[in-house]
Image (cartoon, rainbow, N blue to C red; front, side, top):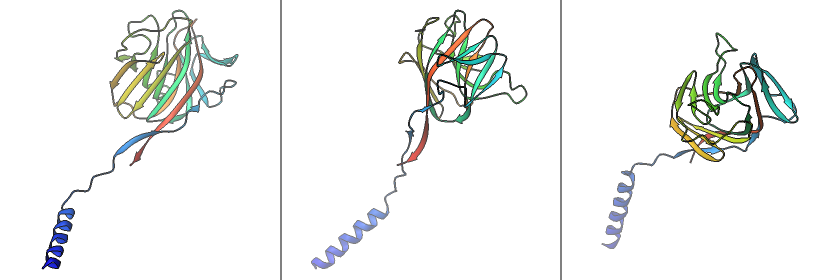
Length: 208
């Protein structure tokens, strides 16, 4: 009798177990190591578009004199990028990501996202821009002309976050651009944009 009851209990256990739904593996983003984008000596790995002049001065990547963009040769989709930046009086610049040169005009404004660098416009440093349009507002202006500041951007799926001087100033969702290059902008004659210590991380999905 006990043997029959044990067999019956085991059958019920396995039937109940078979009826349970198997949980799907969770998907998360994992980070690679920080990878340098600028070697401090040359423009190796970068391609200039437009009229601006780009050069390395005393270990600092420098853009001067007119409209132009300096693109990295590599592309990324889900990413972290960080660097130190300094812009001159009345300077207008930006750190681009998921950006590509327009096919009909490679010297034109990139098609992608821009973390604004400009201490004088209403849509100031830290705002998220898309071509010609301020898209997401930065909570505060925390930078000044001719002073170094740090900027870090994280793009993970449609979530975009921008930190300036280690403060999260912008956070929004947008899915218009999925992949592209990094780039730095020089916007107007007479201005100077400087950058150094530029690194990125690739974020990639991993099934757990």
